[in-house]
Image (cartoon, rainbow, N blue to C red):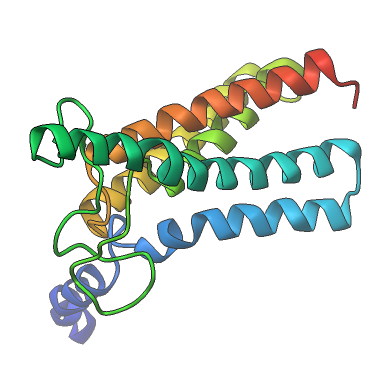
Length: 200
């Protein structure tokens, strides 16, 4: 009977401490975790495929930095110079939202780093797209398991994107969507190159 009286308190504690949508550490560390897993795959199961995928992961991360610095930032600077506003129609703002958590783990609530496109979203959707294409192409599992894995991967990528906007507040919706689109394109291209142009 004592345990029955404690149930509401235990539930309140659990709900206040642990929430499925309040696990930002997973989302924040996702590019590092994915990179580490791909690197470990290169070490433990060395193959042309594992090395290729790790190199492509590095290229996706580097391409995000290049896109931020040499494509999107100059576009936003030109737009600001002409129209005196840092908000481009459809694309929104290029800098990170005011009062969001920054990705540099400092206590500065006004992060001035450029946020377009989201690297976390790009990496998450790249690896999701690549794995889904590989699962469908190689037909390693039965159809129902295949669809379950695809849904799980999509939900994980969606959670990472969601957390960057609504939990950590370090990106806008547009930055996450553009990162996701670039990630999907990268995943498709990398899969296509691997299976059509390179014999691994």
